[in-house]
Length: 118
Image (cartoon, rainbow, N blue to C red; front, side):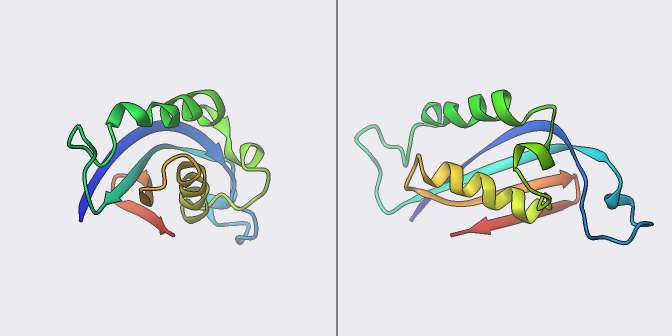
């Protein structure tokens, strides 16, 4: 099995609803996110790739146009903006374009990651 991944960066704000009022994440705040998309394949294409990294440019365009410097509660259309939900959002978006997508990871801080695998 071959595995490749690529990271993208964006900044966005969000509020986590349903937390105690004194929880810092219940307040409006933002992060410098890292999203990492992972693709897997049993075999390689004629060029020797699972998928050419350049083909993932659509994800960068999506992030730049719809996600970067936005309020995620508005963008995602609900209050489920935990890293876990954001990872699932990106997984679903990517899987619709590239069947080799096996996981998406989201980092809100240098020490934390959430991952969604289909």
